Image 1: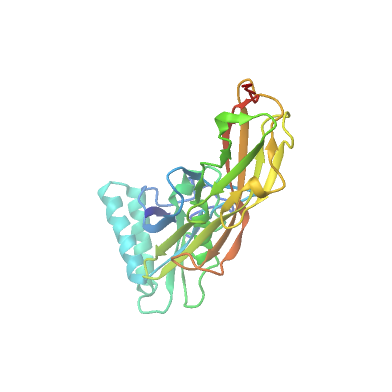
Image 2 (image 1 turned 45 degrees about the vertical axis):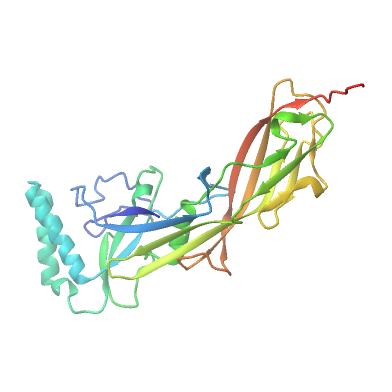
Length: 317
């Protein structure tokens, strides 16, 4: 299990300027400036990926969520404002100290942080790993605000958002396929059989978060291999490529109608490539479950191995 910290962006009501704010550009976008953060842990559980996995590629455009709103109780909001207030004073940061002092006084005067009222504070929270991506954007503007019950913001964390976050953490086997004959002993005019077996039949990632108000939200994505495209790596093959449908995460191309056959020795090696397409589904659960909804685009993994093709040597006895 791995955990990811989420940075809480505190601001003056518009913590992130514009509809596509760059989280690494804090000029005028965050009034805190103290570098501290309120964090929420998103726990990831990976299954079936193996030791040779690599981050999944995507067959189309896909971007994991960069930010969302996290719920806080009035007491939690008060304690966080005060914590920042005292931290700023201790560090001698006069402007920041005054800002949090003003925020505290304003919120105390305005119903003591809405103490005793039904509802929540909603605080903009950044995916810390996405903060490292200079192209990451956040569509939400307000840093924090109070909302009555049954009126959560459009950007509150949901299972679907966690599904996208989990998809962004998905890793897929990179070992590719095995060949028969083996890659180092391919023969001219003999078919190259392709074999693939995924022991677990699927790869999955669960993303789960416990919000400051105690609510647990989870989602699990499941990737299953569904098709394979292989290329011989040379024009001296017939056919130069083949496509296969996967059945139960297994493939043995010996019984199919397409197998690459090299018709010229390599005099070195040819780059044999195998591109696997994975269908990805998700459920709002903390474990893999049947009946998942499909996520788009498909996952994608690729591998390459050098093959040596030799002429068949005949021996006369």
